[in-house]
Image 1: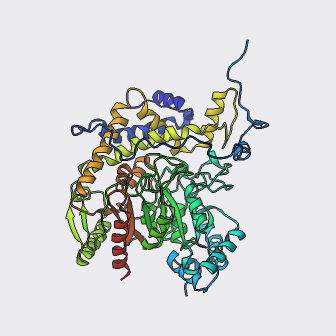
Image 2 (image 1 turned 30 degrees about the vertical axis):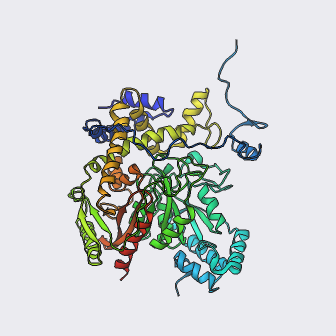
Image 3 (image 1 turned 90 degrees about the horizontal axis):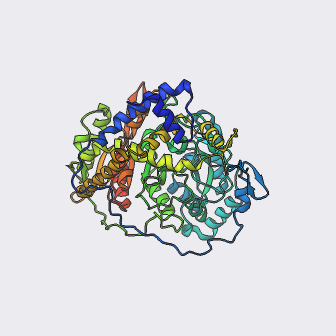
Length: 98
Length: 477
């Protein structure tokens, strides 16, 4: 049975927040879904079922070359930045000095 | 004569070649129908202005190449909002990407541009394709053209409604757990989920990367084949796309053996849906096909396995959306607050629920019991299907247990997930699957379409088209 504390912890791990007002509803729904998918955790698998199904396609490689001329997409990508300085993406300072 | 927008791809292509009307007139008819009905249906999130250059180029190609011109040349299509068209917004039905403009074309878009197809607009969908009704779109629910008090299914509900209401000649959607086939069944059209890897995922906004496939929603089986043929193929930009004949080949046959997993059809299905299914099977038998029982015991666990694998991949794929490089950006005191505020404001309730679920099943202490076990169940399921295909050519069941439900009817997330109960297996196994209309059932005085669903071995879409044509023939006669 999931608790509201566990849901809060999962939210923190997921970098989202769940409002206090919706926490009880979220926890209840979360609990019902886990109870449904829990059938898998107790399911007895046939021998040899590892989850590593041999796929006929493996080790797909490509030539390590220049896919397109440098700068082709730069302007389009830079235009999407929420904050920028020239072509540099601006984010908050992570490491404080001193 | 039908209104131009009501034609199928085949009919429109034929008449364009016969110069009964021009590409411009066909575009105008679809555009006018879309503008007239979109307010009621909310099928499109955006209707694109006419691309005069593309229209003129398509007309010129038809005029000069005649019958040699691609069938999709000059055909107006609707595109799901998670497929990138360079320069256009691709929001995936989310506030998170409401200002995101695609910087490149999805491979399927490039292929369609190469054959001269036209894009009418981007269609509504459940946020990041998480849902079975379009009610989880950040931009309002799409309505079912057969009864506007009901949902069109989802997540490709906008594409389905646009095609069913003849706003577009056909559409593309994406399918992760049934998102093409379920809305196709609910709106009375054809929906194909191709073999995993048959169609490039480059430029498709990812939901569950081991499950997602782009596919057609069309008015006929032949149109689905035409659109599928135009978009399929190995792509260097998608390492999971597959070459021709990767899997064993299966020859087309005149009469097919149809496997029915009766043990899955004992409860939870509306009586009239099951009767329509049995009636269609009888008609297929009368037409020379053979119906036999097959056993697929792991299928009873498929939905549970799906709702472990898919959220796990969702929580990983949506990790990239953090308000830093593109999309919605909210700012707090710290960098962590920037992430949390952006993600919390940008994602809707269902998306947040699935991210939490995915984080849970992947977390240390639970990953063995849930994720790895679900992965093993997926393997067993695929083996069961492979074994079944030793004795049958296709496996059939109703696409959905019931016709389209009322808007707002399913408030419990689990009840909504059960909509996918028959469709998720093809996504888990990677096998192709097709939904074809199999008549109507009556609810509240309205005739609501229902669909029959066929799965076949990997890379045998041609068998699906064959059985789909047989069903279509029965229901058109």
